[in-house]
Amino acid sequence: MKRTSIFLACLLPLVASFSCSRVEPAGENQNSGHNGEAEHDDDDHLAEVRLNAHVIERNGIRTESAERRLLLGALEVPAEVQVNPDRTVHVASLAFGQLIDINATLGDYVKAGDVLATVRSVELGRLRAELTEARARKQAADAEYSRSKTLASEGISAKKAAIEARARAKSAAADVAAAQTSLAVYGSKRKGGSEFFLRSSITGQVIERHASPGEVVNSASTPFVIADLSEVWVIGRVYEQELAQVSQGMPAEVALIAYPGRTWSGTVDYVSSTLDEDTRTAAVRVVLDNRDGLLRPGMFGTVAVASTGSTTEQGASEVLSVPDTAIVTLGDRTVVFTTGDEPETFVARDIVPGARAHGYVEIREGLVEGELVVTQGAFVLKSELLKSSIGEGHEH
Image (cartoon, rainbow, N blue to C red):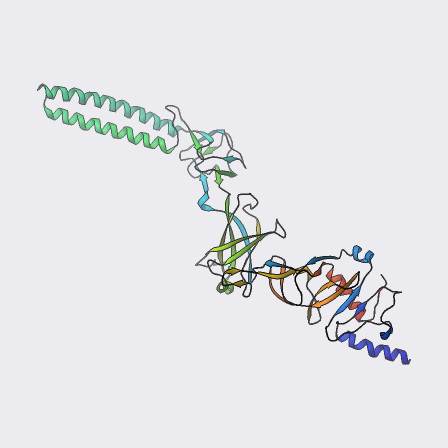
């Protein structure tokens, strides 16, 4: 009975605080001065867990060194990769007609001037007929003017007739020029027929195709969309209450769901001066180089801008950080598990976290660069520590 009372007296302080415990496999000797119970050290607030190699492997416990990273995270907002409108063209047919030949398909890379499709148009045929008629009228008017000028110079006819003939020749020439201009708009250089080409005006990739042979098109339809994807926009959405934290020229980092652990550095080059009425958010833009083609329009991710304390007067600086999966709470403490001095041991280390961005957390106090911390399985260690604290020691 006396031994039970002593045990309960030791148990109550452990329940009140999760610090300072040691968990070891059953059958191994613990500190003899503590009667086989958890070891306490109230000065440094450490708690150690000992597991065997089999348990470590079975629970997937992995470690990673604390490193300095460029961690921009005062504000992290959802974002989407978009095409640069200044490098995007919507290819349309200026005349009502029918597609009779398609030369480009979705995903093709085309050069400026390449033919994308051929259109047969009754309207184009009419314009060509008008050009032919205009040329014929001009030819007749030119001939009449030439005769009138000759007769006037010989005194056979009045100069007035020559002047009138010259006016008619100029009018016919204007008709020809107008007809040629109309045809030039359709991008056709053929001398006859009712067909013209749809061409790309830029070098880029076909990102949309709404064209099939035999389909009827007009000025309201867009058979092709071509985009130069060597540069893209990343548009983030910042809520009204967070706008004061963002300004043009701030360093920014972009992370995408498609590429875990990878980021792209850029600068906020635009902050919208208006808010979306429905979402109460403002657009922020980061322009990124995309010559490697990894950034695809429509991808989702985040944009993070510099945090206070993460930047210097010269710009962004690196801070000590660990993956956010390493951070756990023990009561009112925030800790990470580091490797212990002995093999297969892990120590709960109190830390002071800072900025968060792209799956990493800044460590302001409690760690030094290069220390190994548990990044996978930290909650397993927390569970073992809590079980030990309430007297449920497990065999491993």
